[in-house]
Length: 136
Ligand code: ZN
Image (cartoon, rainbow, N blue to C red):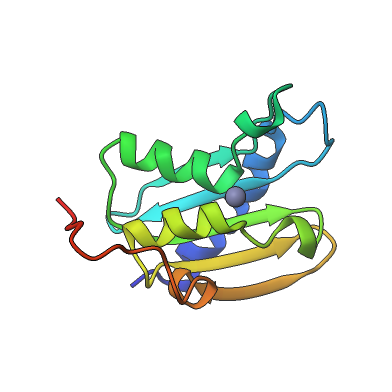
């Protein structure tokens, strides 16, 4: 289980990662950081595209970076945005979170002072999980 110090470190990493956002269309900057069971931190920021649907959220950028780097046991993710509305993960990101750990802690922090903690499964209690598709 992640201690208080490592979770505070995670939130700071997400706050710093926000500066890496590429958001020339919305102007919205979001940072995310994930903590692996081994204590590694991987970060991400939102990356937009002129073809809007190709944009990727900070949460998925960070999660995919962790997984691609070999860290699949993720215990927590921190998301930092300007305010509550840009800090709560979207449905797609929630689905990706539960894929890697339904009990993953989700720390949501707004620069404006918004603060809420949850878990991936509390944010997405009825996830897409078709019968017959076993995890390999
Ligand atoms: Zn998202």
